[in-house]
Image (cartoon, rainbow, N blue to C red; front, side, top):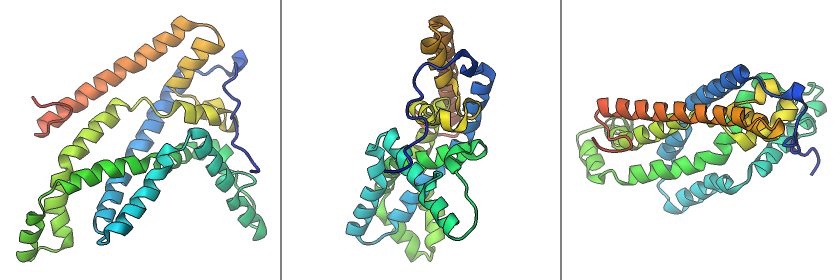
Length: 255
């Protein structure tokens, strides 16, 4: 395939001038985490609700399998697929050239890198979340829908008063886990694309710890960065779990 993914060999030891800055890595981590929380987290919920409305079980299972399949792909394959679609020699730019509309190599655009990373994560991992939320939907008593329909409740009222409250416990649990993992925004995914977009856009705490621990043999500094991330993640998951208890949900465990 033409136009292989940029930066696939970027794991080699970089020169000291390319070692990431701790402040920039932390800023990128928080920004990517926020973007993925806002744009990625609701998508599996929406897909599960849409699939739940499909009456044909065979069609529902087919769509679910197709959406879930990219979960088994490696990040190398995932990024290569996006390179073939959105890279300089990809399908998008070939279409733009045919219509004399210029080109846009999204794979090397640092300004839209956060959206690109989120789109890759959605394509690869949304199917896993769909399975979790479909399981939550399957646990809702169908008699509630029948009783609501008899009382004249439409589809949207049934979803608002039955479906979403029935999923709330699982949604809160997944949100707690997501917040606890907020500082992990994709080590391998970002490392593979670091050369293409530049370290100022692609460096996060994980890559910062890797480069300081491996590239410069400064294991103490790299371990300190990793420890900082672990402590903050522990505090985030503890705080999110406490917040879930305040709203009457179990969170990770019952009080």
